[in-house]
Amino acid sequence: MAVLIDPPLWPRHGRVWGHLVSDTSLAELHAFAARAGIPERGFDQDHYDVPAERYGELVALGAELVDGRVLVRRLRASGLRVRARDRVPHTH
Image (cartoon, rainbow, N blue to C red):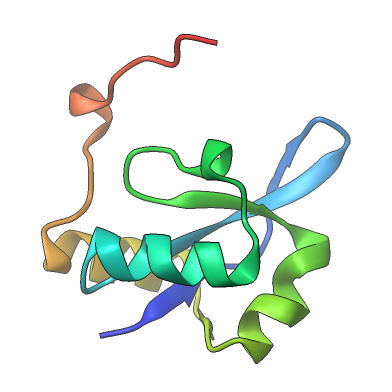
């Protein structure tokens, strides 16, 4: 029952990104993101993409820093993981 964040490893748009998820509910994830000022456009079906420069702040707000494998395992166990084949393509 936590909001989890994995190390930023994914380069895109001149920044490095990681993932913010909840292993409890999407409502918990969206509430945390709103409190942290993370834009809704950062949400990607089961996680928010967050830039490396926000990590310290997000951990200070209560996100638990975990290895990427742990993040995925806990997201799957929660039933919130959207599998690649079930993802809705981006329209932008």
